[in-house]
Length: 241
Image (cartoon, rainbow, N blue to C red; front, side, top):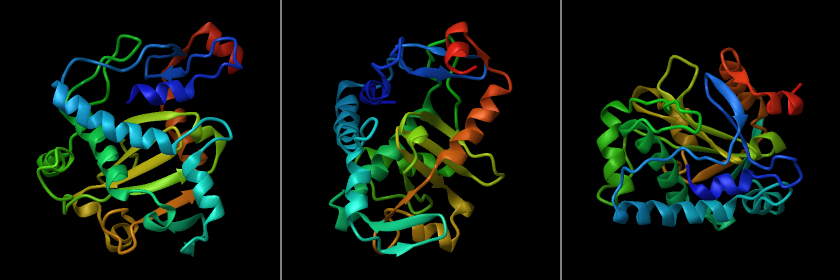
């Protein structure tokens, strides 16, 4: 995850402003990031430019530039649990958003990263989509035909203060998830891309759609799965009785 996202999650109003990090073994506050030395300078610069663009759309607390744009725009369509907007009408670049999401998945697929508590990140298997994703994020190929990126901008406060690292969703289908401080990405791959999901993709839909919705229920599910085995530190127990 980009360093800039960790900065967004720091809360100066708390006694310990550092974000709370959870893995399957431990839950605690830390300023350390999931990091390692893997890529060359050219690749790091390439990723960094896209991460800067994404960070400009995010915020902290009541400041969330992308959501603010959506609130003053008319939705293209309303659904039972979400409102659908067109990326072009919001003045956002869908290609950069999709590339950012796929770069996070690809990096999780090629390396197990050291986490702040001495564990390892979850390694994911992108299957036949791995090389097309690599070519796309390195500007060597078009958007992969066997991949979709569905973008949910989170209207709830909890999701704007959280990160969920790339992981396979809880369903039996091949759908990966990433949450980056207010934007929840769903990435179906291969046979999981049915016509409805293809129509929701920010790159494959005719109008390059992105959605505004409450993402809290899905985030709570992730927390629940981790909390089954994760031991909270004393400091965290004070904040989360």
